[in-house]
Amino acid sequence: MNGLTGTGSPIEARQSPLPYTVMFLAFVVIGIFFIVWIIFKLIGKYKKSPSYIAKQKQRATAFRDVQALAKKINLSHGESILLFNICRRGKTKNIFYNWTDTETLDATFKAEFMRLQKKGVSGEEIEEFFKLRNHLDRIIALKKAISSSHHIQPGEFLEFSTGSKKLELKIVKNEKANLILEIPEDFEKAPYCPKPLTKIMFTYHSPKKLKYALSTRVVRYQEDFEGKRQMVIQHSNTISMQGRRHYKRAPLDVVCSFSAVNETQGKKGSISYSPKENKYRGKILDISPGGCKLITKLPIKRNQKVWIDVTIPGLERLQCCGLIVGMRQKNDMFELNVAFLDVSTKQRNDIFSYVYNYAQNT
Image (cartoon, rainbow, N blue to C red):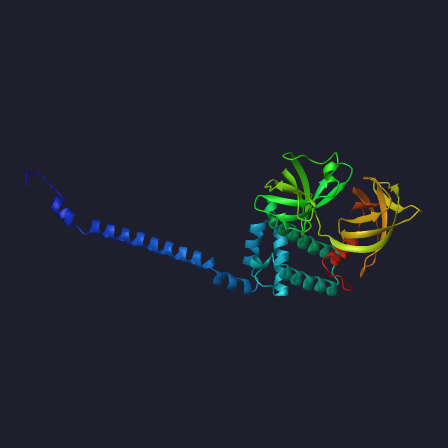
């Protein structure tokens, strides 16, 4: 009409099913996404439930569990493969949930060590095995590190340095705001005694063999009901781990002999060590693959080298050179911290087996 053509009136457009179809489909898609979101939320909630975690802890370790753990604690690809193979052979319960459980870790690695020994693998392969175990131990130690003096228990000690010696002050009470320490009888008369309200530094050695530096302030000195003098110090959140050890140590109480060291320069710049003739008697108080603590009556200074000769129960005789990296006087004895310089792979693996109680005769 009048030369005009059209596609329909507005009323006809509103009556068309297409807009309603599009709206319906949009609502359907939104509904599906909402349902999926709800399902994922429920699954996530279930995976955090005690019943789900209990089931997961009991099943055997799968590779995906090791991958998840490796991502969580930054294990290398090689460490992940090695850990999975150890868990697979040992039929270890889900390592992702059980990696901090000492009994699970000990049983798994001890069984693998026995298998490696029976198979007669190379020292290098056993060394990689122990490196993994040691790495896990260091991560666990960091995970369990304390961040406040509120966690220190009565009966433990804080170490106070006077300059010439170190005093161990026993914690007798852990109160909400303060720690109460037992002090020696003449402590307050000594020139090194800190005055009330002054800052003070302590060293704390935890039951897990971790060393902390603790900064706090003296509140006051007081007397208990038995007339013993005490120091009251503020609780501190300024506490930091010190000198993280590379290796786990094991207590030892074995007599040893030691001597000074001859150093011989090789053609290619290498240095070999051998003991000098004069030998002295000492005692090893603890040991790790990286070093030991030697106690003696001789005041040997730091940076001196010593040749140690000792037989550890269940192991072959250990003879090696070490560097004194620390010295501490305790009464009339001297405790020497010795870092090993030339321990062989075989000797290091032997010490590892003793530290972890894997040695066959221990």
